[in-house]
Length: 163
Image (tube, rainbow, N blue to C red; front, side, top):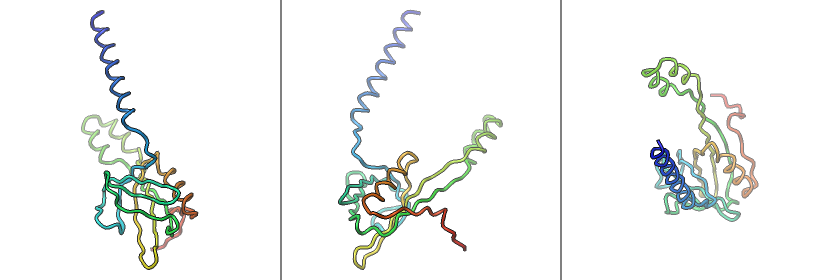
């Protein structure tokens, strides 16, 4: 019994040291993880994982360690925000195979995706793109973009658009 307890304690200590060293390696560089959802940035495909950096004099978009584009905050024309809310039907069906009750409960839950759109114009050259932000980061992205550009973000759900 005593040996098992010491082995468990040693495993927990090693696990905590591993997590501590990983936390030291992952330093916060002030950027945001986003996913490219489409737009006019050449060379990027939908679903590309990017890092967005918002500085007072520039907005940088990087893919891995490669600079994709740089925008001057004064060129930003519009900032928009929207959500995609959907039910987790696929996960519910998968869980229903194992347990019908859990699958039924899962079908009642919803998932939200947060999207931020950005358009800019530099002389005659206009561009824009949409990005999916993490649920913990989208407010920071919006606040940062509003702060450096002086533009207010528009909630796309609040706009009355008739098809």
